[in-house]
Image (tube, rainbow, N blue to C red):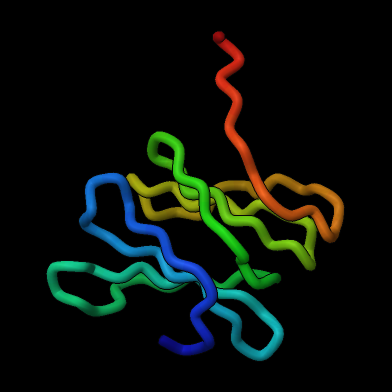
Length: 99
């Protein structure tokens, strides 16, 4: 790991572990291959991710200081466009609007 790990979340299939970390005032997410037990991908973020929420094939990460929710697509391993909020917003919940 290149920074200080803060939060982790395994993917629903148990194959990967997402690790949120802080380094030099910025954030980073590492993807750990749990079979090989090594980091295989890293993504630099503007702010430190404080928590994860995984829904379907997307990993949502709260970055409180920047007021963003960063989104990692777990199928393509690409970062999606973030959701911009207000700095200081903490926590996430998922509401199924179909119910």
